Picture (cartoon, rainbow, N blue to C red):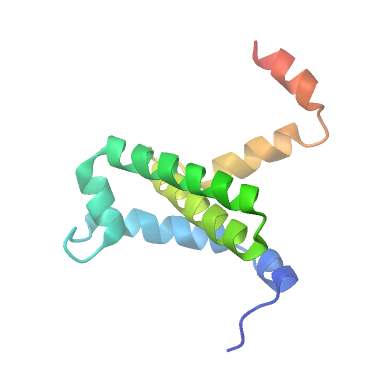
Length: 115
């Protein structure tokens, strides 16, 4: 199967949910055979540390301006954010619902509503 184009990948339904389902399954996996199970076994701080590392790498990639590296680092960051969500019994549906709620709302106005 050929690699999907950017538009095909974006239109593929449920890829975030499919990944979330796998991350849930990894909660029961052996930490010796699963990277995600190993992260879960190390506790919340391990996941938070990975998110910090990936966020820093994303910033560095953006500063360098290399599109392929930016995509790779954002992919790593999103992945670890999904691990964090799963760790807390959440998934991409909650984040997508919040994005939909905010859609069309001025960022300035949304921040005012939070306070």
